[in-house]
Amino acid sequence: MAKPVMLTVDDDREVSRAIERDLRRKYASEFRVLRAESGQAAMEIVQELKVRNNPVSLFLVDQRMPGLSGVDFLERAISLFPDAKRVLLTAYADTDAAIAAINDAGVDHYLLKPWDPPEENLYPVLDDLLEDWQASVPAQFEGIRVLGNRWSPESHNIKDFLARNHVPYQWLDIERAETDTDIRALVDLLDLDEKRNLPLVIFPDGVRLQRPMLTDVAQKIGLQTRAAKAFYDLAIVGGGPAGLAAAVYGASEGLRTVMVEREAPGGQAGMSSRIENYLGFPSGLSGGDLARRAVVQARRFGVEIVSAEATALRLDGPYRFLKLADGEELSCHALLVATGVQWRKLQAPGVERLTGAGIYYGAAITEAISCRDEDVFVVGGANSAGQAAMYFSKYARRVVMLVRGSSLSTSMSQYLINQLKQTPNVQIEFNSSVVEVHGDDRLEAISVLCSTTNEVNQVPANSLFIMIGAAPNTKWLADIIERDERGFILSGPDLMRDGKRPKGWQLDRDPGLLETNVPGIFVVGDVRHGSVKRVASGVGEGSVAVSLIHQYLSKVV
Ligand SMILES: Cc1cc2nc3c(=O)[nH]c(=O)nc-3n(C[C@H](O)[C@H](O)[C@H](O)COP(=O)(O)OP(=O)(O)OC[C@H]3O[C@@H](n4cnc5c(N)ncnc54)[C@H](O)[C@@H]3O)c2cc1C
Image (tube, rainbow, N blue to C red):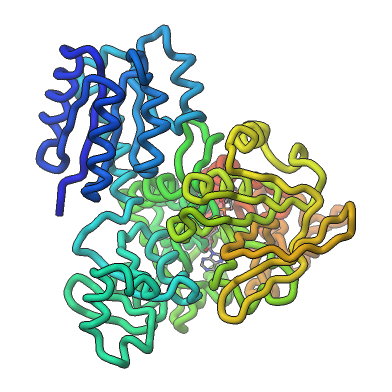
């Protein structure tokens, strides 16, 4: 496989050579380091790389150059390599321009010159970005390949599962077999049964799974699907930011900790293309990146991460038993519910039938590349819809946001509203709701109602991404854990009614902060009644819960 390219651009020859030397010293074994001394010369290299289909991992570009400035160059270069990481080199006086470039050119980082010593000021930043790039870009490699149909929900589910578990894969769309010789050659090698039973997942060791269940894929890629021990001090259900934070704190403080996650660690945050308000990341970071870091951290402290769904809860004295979807049970002293929320379904004729075949809940980042140069419709007016629109705008010809209300100001952060306004291929339609979708086996059109005129218009559409709020999925706990009328779990003072403790509560104290109506069962994050639905608050609650769990354990163990 061709080594991915790192391209550095600086008009000062001495500086340019120094950067090249520093990059080669550390990265030459894995990357091809190229250098240019002007924005124009660099654009010629970039175009040549595109023609040759060589991957570009990083642009490291001086801001102040005659002709094309660093930001101007990046704006052009990223239209050819949208996934490449972008670092701007600036002098102190250009810091404002660099900060503005975070939005304009999607700059991932800016470095002040000089960066000596590189071990401290250059390599850590680049290591981080390159790791992120490698984790998120499906490169041309000899890894897992998924052959299927773009409009098949099963294909979508497998791609989504692999991507969210940070497993690189190559997607081969059977519809492109006529024009893509690689796909054609592969299809020709398959037997009839395999061609009829797509998706087909092909592993590097030659194993081929036809229409596999996600648990089969999980096992094959080495995810742990069963708990290794029968008993834990702390079991956590849900691996979103709240569950992950609790796992890190729990295990780092010596608790035998297991985290059960049914899809992929990261939860909703893992679906976010860019979280910009999480403390300590001034250029923002993708949810996938946040999740990947947290998983590494949790594993380092010895957290066991089990890829499974918790389906039932049982109590026996001080022991809490979790039943998993495969029928296995695990037990613990303290249980933390961090199951978050899942997308609310859009109730309109046709939507359920075509989900996965052009209709997706959430940003479905895996589908973005398939939408290149097409029109994409996004339903919703909150931050998640805004982030998705910004993300798709890098690939799609046009992104149309369908917003039920008459403005975004009450539902979306101002920084996102500003970004949307400045993005020419994003169009926002207010007072608009999808009332029906059309198509036989894939989405072909949507009917949109305008609430001011009461008119319904049918418009052609291939892709519709729905982000209209979320609801908790806590029915499996309903017999034991007290919930509010919408299914969010009650805890602490919210459980007290007219000064009385919850039914069945036998301890000589009130339920503590984040504690449910069952002693030793705690709740954190979005699934908790009254929680603030943010990454930072989930992380905060997950961390605080561990200290409360310690207090609980000190009395029962
Ligand atoms: C697209 C998008 C963008 C966002 N952007 C931002 C942002 O920029 N800034 C910000 O602060 N917040 C943002 N948020 C909100 C933020 O992501 C959530 O508040 C946060 O993820 C909540 O964390 P959580 O751990 O409580 O739950 P979740 O993230 O919902 O995680 C819950 C996890 O539990 C798992 N689970 C559920 N039931 C079970 C079960 N029975 N068994 C096993 N596992 C189970 C789920 O698969 C999921 O992984 C965004 C949300 C979305 C959807």
